[in-house]
Image (tube, rainbow, N blue to C red; front, side, top):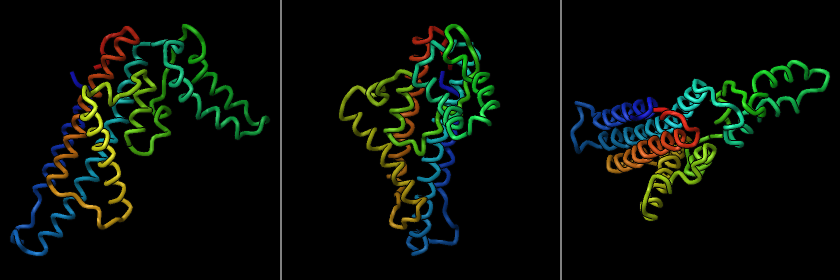
Length: 228
């Protein structure tokens, strides 16, 4: 069964497809304005697709954290990198605060994070803290996120052949870079409907396969039921 995050992502792909069918009833297929419309629609589709793709990563992270919190997984069973990432924000804030004003922050840290460093004690993870470092869903960022949970190479985990792996990596990178170029005002950055379909396929393939792989890995690693 797919995660709720994946189901939402797949549903969102319909919006991108519908946008691709947009047309102006007063324009003929060979009108100069139709080329401008096609260009604008393609650019808009890429921005939407990249946004939905990024949203999936944040949403599946939230769904996973909610599941682990409900399972009352003790802090010492969580990967060390997850615990370090979770504690990074309050510790960094502490380091920037004078000693005479640290009491409240220390009390807050003990209440919210001490369980992560004490054997046999469970608590509540904050999903927002685990992705404060992510700026865009580039392949390197995806590697880093899934590695936090013990999947060392998510691209290798969801593909069998090296050439397929390389194609998926470059496809994800291409989508994110094209979106960034469009968002930063590069008017030459554009996508045909064939390009959009290709990027949709890369994003869907990654999300569907990573979704299954993460669920199986979490269930096996923590010896719990599947999170979805």
